[in-house]
Picture 1 (spheres, each protein chain N blue to C red):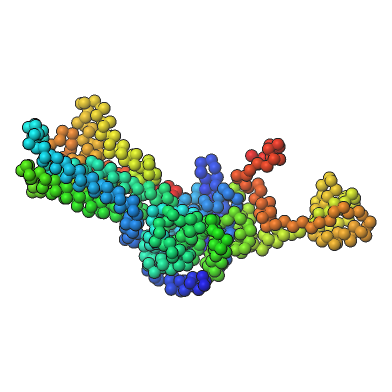
Picture 2: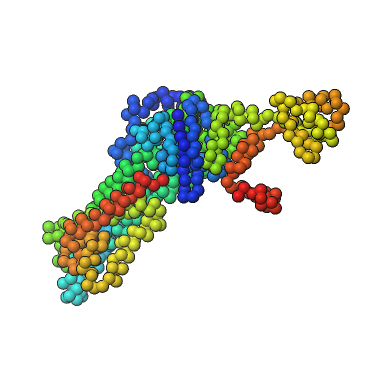
Length: 279
Length: 313
């Protein structure tokens, strides 16, 4: 029976070239799309990231609106309705960065990577496909979350007539920028996952860059700070969400470009190593 | 067809594969034998381009693996049962692999039926037993209906029924004209499936022979003779095609003569025999004999413990 099935299969398939079977970048993209969708852990981590982005922004706006009557004047002066509604990004970036690491390190820890690289031995199409699929999905979902957080937050704030409009200066840029920033953090996670190939190590490095580096940088002499702080990866990236001038931030798009450059550099390094190292 | 030429892999000081050259031919099952740590898995990873050789080269169907446009259709590999993301279902695992090469979902379903995983196809692979993992690994190897199969210890973790199944599957695949390259550390298993064996030890090629030759060499009988006049008997027995090994205790190991012949020669010269017994080496013994010096991880025996000079290191 076994033989019969095998034989039938062989006859039906024939030579690969004749059946149009070959590895293409598009097909590898499709494969990575199947992979991304078919893991429950990916789904839940993404929900957590999106949940942080929307819930914290909404909550922040709600509490501000409720306590606005008793808020001190100088605090009121420093308040930005746009920034408040997008404040969830700082926690969301951790979940999305972790997910980025897992997209690759999960394959190394389970051994799946050997199956993947056997199917695509040129290797780099896999890295590009993972980055592209994960990046696109993250961009769409975080943009959605950012929009919900913004409009929902402004709805809460409107009770005190302190809401912002999407047409306000910098508002649209900040809302879209939050999604772009989170996507870049996710891609940084992918690059670190490919570079370090270990979940714990990848996540630790990511948290080091996102959480620890900004804290450490305050240890540099005060006179150096203006030359150092704006160029740190996440400080640079966060500038895209600035509505008011921030002392230690670059101009919004310049900052995002610097952060993108960091991410692309790590991705390029991981590509070189992925091609070179034994799987 | 797999062709390895001078294949070498070093990890720092340690040499895992040492100047290995061999050819795996289509239409037969070729066994790849060696003790644990002999370099079998490393060799297989190099065939698939997962590890880069330090020196030498290996081609599949005339080209390095990575240069094929549809690698899954050239070589199907089962390198380890656990090359599967534990959180993904068997079906999605196979579908994702198939998608890279444009292999359709019809074929995914075909291989699932072929390896008998239909009932658990929608279950996550993390809950699979070792045997189910092996079957899933085989399913991914067969996805592209490849001309070459490279299987690392495919019978690992399978129950007796599963072992019989895989034995027949390998033979069927070879009968279709495929090159089937199967590693094992069990000689007895290979004797039942393989037509040709490549034996390695400590990364070096030890033997590259048809299984028949191997079996014949292994089953060549010797006769154990014990006699108080061993010296005299020895002189009478020695001749062309006959070898006699002796030790000081009056025991001879004779090959090339049967028990009957030795008995008659002894009687004709009125020599006393205390013992006359045929000795047959099993395949397993022949394999162990062959790889004795090449075993990397061996439990010390009592003799070795008391006599460090005999220890392999």
